[in-house]
Length: 185
View 1 (cartoon, rainbow, N blue to C red):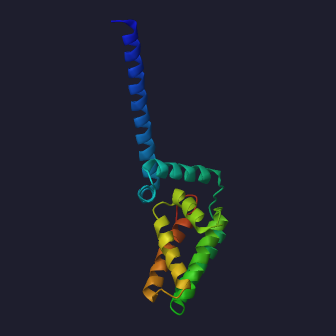
View 2 (view 1 turned 90 degrees about the vertical axis):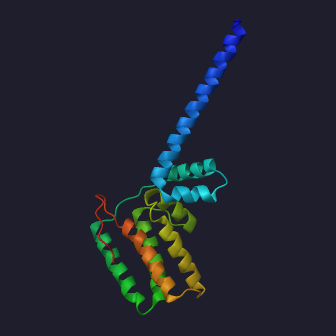
View 3 (view 1 turned 120 degrees about the vertical axis):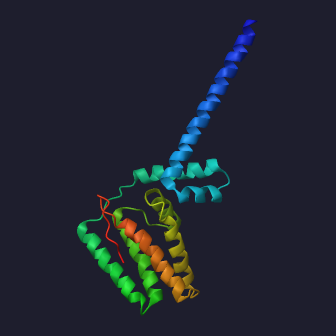
């Protein structure tokens, strides 16, 4: 065979090998992101124009999260927040609307103390999704009810659901370094 045929075969083999390696790396990245983000991965993919864009966004979230100094709450702060949460739940009986507003404020306050930036809601969601992907959808749902409630559009049952959603994230945020968490009910 002429030498140029061997060159073409060699180049083709290198191209095929590069494509295979790229596919394996992309699959591993996808599996890692899916494992890390769980349902948030599926949500990002469904809302994005492409899987690649969604995965790039999730990777950016991880990179940003790595630059944040997220700290556990001190035992004193944790107890104070648990007491505040009990007041939110007790206050729900007489003033459900106010309880939802207080739950929103309390979750934001815990996030601030832990070290999460709290400038805007969508950024808070993105940051929380890295550490707490299983409950970030609760945060979205609770916040949506909270906003609708400001316009007086929510029933008492909707407000109760908002408090339940906030509680899911609140419990996650109160986790201590060793992973122990008291049920904040």
